[in-house]
Amino acid sequence: MCMSHKIRCECGKETAEFTMRDEVLAPEVIKKVNCPACASADGHDAHTMLADNGWVIHYDMEVAELFAARMKAAGKVTPEYIFDEGYCTWAGYCPGDLKQAAIEKEEIVKTMKADPRGYVKKLMDWGQGRARRLSDAGWRKARHAV
Ligand SMILES: [Zn+2]
Image (cartoon, rainbow, N blue to C red; front, side, top):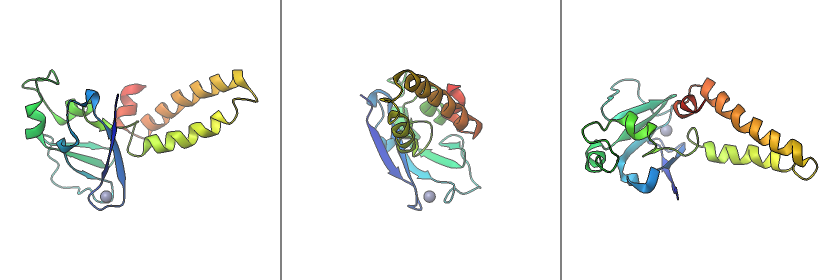
């Protein structure tokens, strides 16, 4: 099972939800998270940070390195690898996505009784549509999904 972990950004305005594939890494691998409001433009360090649509995740690469073998990435652990392989990545396509998805889905579920067949199609269209929408918006995980 994939548990999700909520992490507040540095300025405290936003919360990002993370999942950790197979729970190989612990949430401690996240040093800090910046939302677009508290991310600083200078000092991006590609060795420890992953930037996604204005958000920045700061990984503790020393911690990540300890689990390199378990991530099948001995000698090649990078923030991109950790994120793209799902070892420590947004729950959903972007921070706060699970909550937003639940709200949108709720609306579709309401139509199930009245139109069961249309409901299934609506649900599928919705799933594909939102991946595309978030991809167009520039979110890394959605870009990989479409
Ligand atoms: Zn912030």
